[in-house]
Image (cartoon, rainbow, N blue to C red; front, side):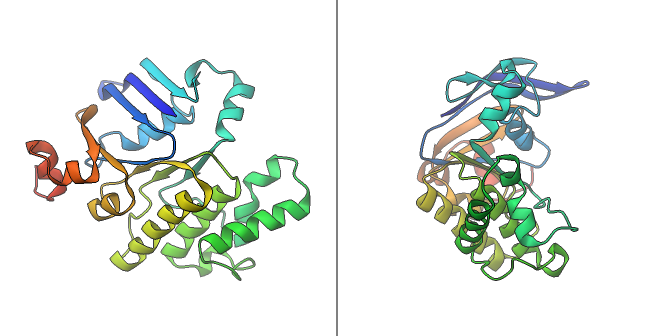
Length: 241
């Protein structure tokens, strides 16, 4: 389980999180929605210890992330797959080398690394792309390689940072399907950051909205669809602020 309790975070004079509280339950996919620049990605960075809160608690499996030493933090990170907004692939590496990158830090036998890479590529429908360079791939395929890299680690948790940003509707739907498939095949707990409501409805068990530094509302997909909160309704209907 992932818990953030009364988290505050500022960058200079700008208050980004102001009492942010959210629990991601084991086995669910929770989607965090909100306007651009409201701090959704900041939440993810707190979970993996890339940022420390000014106040409040960030807890993963009962461990207080900001209080962990480097070895303990690395142990937490081993359980977390992180899918970056822009895939973050290394252009000098092949697809297979990109997917294997995290595995090479785990002292695994080469045969197991190859097996995991092939399994992950198959799960995202990219079998046979091993030797291709990222520059040869479409934007959607690059996103899928990024997903495969996270899957290959066999994590307990998956964090997705805007997985459908910049994709056409058809490709975005493919990514949504793969997010769902990853949960079904691996049993992972997921936290998806997005402002794409179609994607949120497709992949989420629950949806939470971040607004003015805290959670404005959290509920099931149906509860969010039917919300009478004016701020949430304005966002999900795509009306300007």
